[in-house]
Structure formats: C-alpha cells, structure tokens
Amino acid sequence: MSAAHPDDRAGREPGRPRIPLICPRCGHEQRVVPGGPDRAVRVVHVATGREACEPADLARAPDDGT
Image 1 (cartoon, rainbow, N blue to C red):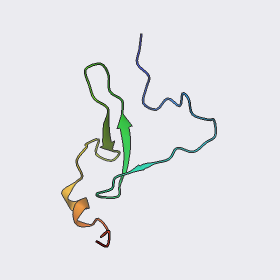
Image 2: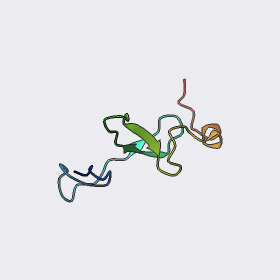
Image 3: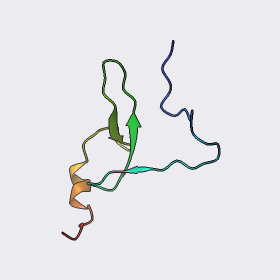
Image 4: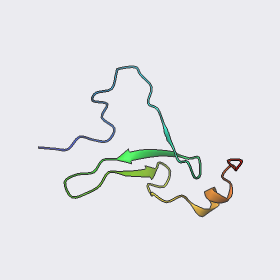
C-alpha cells in the first residue's frame, strides 16, 4: 500500500483554487508535508523546504504595527 502524494487533490472540489499558507513571521508561502506513523506533519517554506524562516527574510518582514 502506498501513501498519498502531497500534491494529490483527493477530497478537493475540481476547479477550486488552492488557498496558500503564508508564514506569519516572514510572509512567504508554505506547504504541508504529510506525516506518517513515525513522523509528525510539518509545515515548511516552499522555496527552501525548511520549517525555519531565512534570517534575511525576517529582517525584511513587514512590521505588524504593535
């Protein structure tokens, strides 16, 4: 039995656009990496594949006004 591929659209309505996940710290797009029996689900940055923000991106992050 094989695991579902993360890009599969099972359960999604055809023609309905995907809602992007945006990192609240740096503002870049993220994606969900499915877990398994021995792994937790992770949210990683699309550009780097890492959970952590790049330091240069944090320096340019917009101020939230607080």
